[in-house]
Length: 232
Ligand code: CA
Image 1 (tube, rainbow, N blue to C red):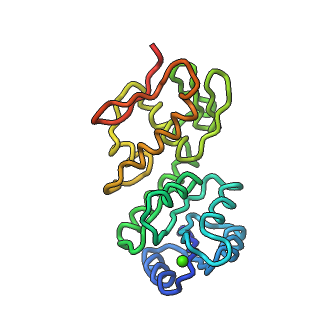
Image 2 (tube, rainbow, N blue to C red):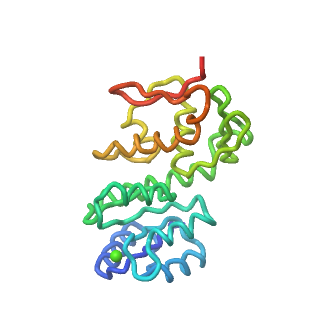
């Protein structure tokens, strides 16, 4: 059965172009010209992935993303943004978007990212980890099945991306991971340039799991990347 992609985009020309390309790739497509209809289409169900324009009339793409993420952590959302400022991208990512594309974008690249996001979502449903399995670094522990994180017995709330990043660090405890590797594994594609998004997210995660505790668990390896270790 083909996956259905919801396109929320007010620019008809772009929406049509996306629809034609996606349908020729075998995806089902539903179109919504604004956030209100986008929400209605989403609520109607059966959506495997959402392409979400940021600048929409009525409810903005960011608002719609928040609304969706409040009820659904899993359906992949790729933001389409005309803005190139990192802050807009980070806002979207921090609110739980899986990826973003800056307009104008290459169709091949978008298709690759759609495939990566769908693969990743399918993997999350199947689950590689045994239920109830905790990964630890000292007094920090994370459960990929229940998506719980605790440090020193205190529950910590992470966004989806922060969680995925921390989980990947923990799966590779003691190994030094490069920014490129983290981008490819956590963001799910080979990302050209702007690897500072990794630094931004490491900062977010540190704020939540390291700041205010006796020992830091995430270490910066100068010139290479990051590593999580048990406190010594
Ligand atoms: Ca728009």
